Structure formats: C-alpha cells, structure tokens
Length: 352
Image 1: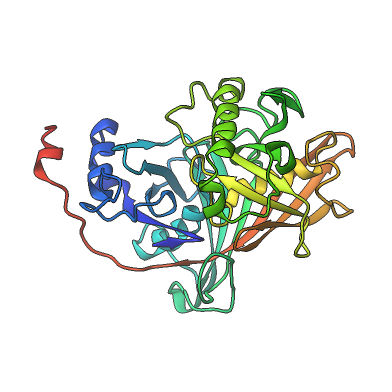
Image 2: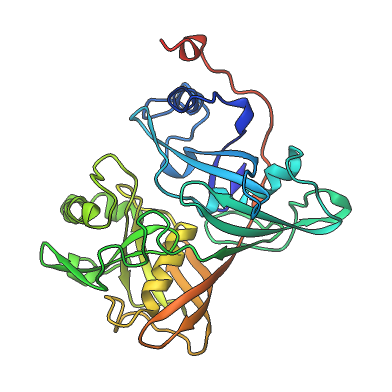
C-alpha cells in the first residue's frame, strides 16, 4: 500500500512468526537485504522500504495495534524505534480490507495504537456502502494525483520515543558550536538553522546529498545528541531525524530540509512535520526569528519542504510561556496497490 508519501508492505500479525528475531529476518527477506533490494519487494529507498504489522488491538482504548518496521536499505536489518505517520495512514484501510475492523456506511473511525511508542491516533476513513473509498479530490505534496482524504488525529504523542517533549530537558542545546532544539512530539527530531550549517535551506535533496561537508556536520551532531535524547547509541538507528529550517518563502510558516537520517527527504515525514511545527510554537527554540506562528489556540501551520508543503493543525493549551499540544491533526491519503503473497526463502524460516 501507499500510505501518505511512503510505500510499504502491510502484514497481518498472525501471518508472521511470533518470534521477533525470526519475524525481522522474514521481513528483511521479503523487502530485500541488499542496497538495490533486487531480491525483494522494497524500492531501494528509505521511503519505500517500510513495513506495517497490524492486528486487532489488545487495548480497550484502540481498535487496531500497529507496529512500524523500517527496513534499513542495504544493511539487512530493521529498526522499530520510531513511528511512521505516512505508513500509519494506510493502516485503517488495510484493517478494513482484511476484516480486522468492520466498516460503517459513510465514515469509519479507526483508533490505532502505535506500538512503537504506545500512543494513539484516530483515523477517519471514507467507507460509502461499507467499502473503502480510495478516489477523491484530496491532494498531498509528494504524491501524484488526488485521492480520498484520511483525517489523522494524533492524541498526545509527546515523548513518543524519548519519554518527553524536550528529551534533553532544554529548549536549546549546543553541539559542535551549533544551536539546536531537540523535540519529540511523535517523532524525535533535531531542529537546526540552515545558516548555522553553511547552507541556505532551499537546496534540493540532490544538492544536499552531494554536500559531504554538510552531511558530516549533521551526522556528527546526531551521533552526539542521540544519547542525550534518551535514544542511546544512534549510529545504527534511523532516529533522530535532522531537520534544517529557514524562513518560509512560499506562503508557509517555516521551510524545512530533513535528513532521515542520512538521505534528504523529498518532502517531510508526517510526525516529523508535527514535531517541527511544535518546535515553532515553543518560546526560546531555534525557530525564533525564522518561523512565523499564528495566533489563537488552534494553529494551522504550513511546513514547507522540497516538493511543496505539509499542513499541520495544532490544538494548543497551557500558557504562552509553556504551551502544550493537546492534539495534532493532519490530512493524508492512501491507496491499495496490490495484494497477494510475497515469497520468502525456506532457509530464512529454518534459521539458516
């Protein structure tokens, strides 16, 4: 399925091994363990090397349990540390298509427990005649054409992977002489000013990926700050994401370039956008003087990225000095691309 601006394989939990180590080997084999993923179903890029494992929820608060698995391209391993809000968008349609959730006639709400962080998200799916509708007029940047809208309401996702909204305990930190804001409102993100890293912040992903000096600076910061964000040694982890900001120049509120963590994202991840938007409303963060913030308790934030913008709605409580995001809402789309069997070599199942 395509979920948001990502694509991946969606499995029912019962169709995979119960043993986690074997499950991960099976998933890697299904996607392909080499850099081209020539021997699997992956797309040789982090955005197309993703997996969702879905089951009926064991929690009374949710309908569905969802485990996100990032298959690390070319390394033959997985990372289950972060969530993925794009792949999440396809979880509810998948759950309805496979009978995990019964559809209503009209709109079907599906409450999803994200196992990676034990947070909740409510997805609203169009189901006329109790069938998932994929056709519609909703358009999201980074995806061709239009599709039916999927409304995603994230419910109190602060500290998803690190345990707190500000995982270092500070609104600003300094690493290698660069001021940064470390934030986790659904995704651990390090926010940095483009000018402090010697770039404009408006470069294309291809230009940034070719800038070895820039990428070395960013990776040095990431490796040092990871343990301070309660993420441990992040050398082999896909978090934290590294987001570089500059003033918006297309009518939005902030402009971003995000590394995930080594390749520059063609857009920006769902929960990454939520975290960046949240950083923008925090007094004293590195976004001060760069981002513009709407007034009022409900803030419509437009996060610009290389292929367009990502709109995030933040419902904010607390005080001006200590704001608290109570709910983050956004729009995604999804599409069922194919269904069938992916064949995994017998040797994988045998543990060889």
